Length: 323
Image (cartoon, rainbow, N blue to C red):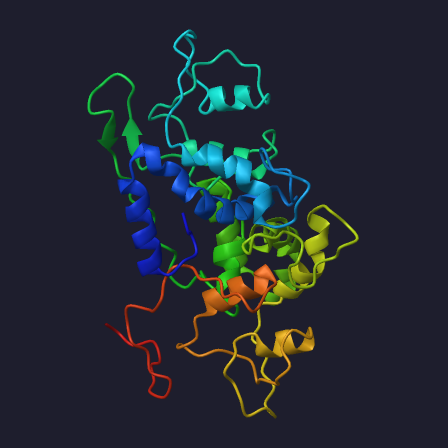
């Protein structure tokens, strides 16, 4: 529900959705439809999503699935005794599974991973949100079914390189974003600890996940530097190769420095004006990166965070001010 709107707009949309009576749920079909392209690209292929139409190229191709999802009810087949497959009744109706299962869900179902997998279109290849299990221990027998059991993470080793932030959005957005916790954590640690000579080893990881952002504008296939000659994730190879170089490039002969990634975008022919590049603490690098990764620079894409909770100076050191 408007996953990339600003905080206020997203909150209002979520409140309206959560408060709406079932009889009025179809009013949200258009909003759901506009967001489905994001998940269509999770397997690096476009238009293979559940119920997606191959006859149109814009977000209208997702109208059928959006209409189904607007009906926010758990459908159960009470004639079946086994209840282990979330969303099974709906998948049976779509002719995608022959399982004898009642549908519904329990506290033990990873409904987010299952939903991502189904929305991507390839039900054989699991798609994860990176959370392998809940932070609490759930039970099917003992009430309350959700019980607290919070783990404490280990602290980092003193003196170890644990982060790198040349292009701030890359690790957050593109390094194993839909893997399980252990895999994502290990990949992020390796990425942040890597020396420049090892940066290219992350190209395949970045390449696989660029399709997610390709679909953020409701179209899949118009991303920056995309190779139209191929339909697999290899189409994102040129951009992935560029992004493995985690350095900020600055053209010191330019006096204007008002656009993050301005130098790279100018070289690619996506902006006409010359900028020095680089970034300051005042630049919303995540929003600019999302917009660039989508491909349509005229349509801003945000992460839902309008401003930082702390004011940062651009002239006084240290630039990252304490609250």
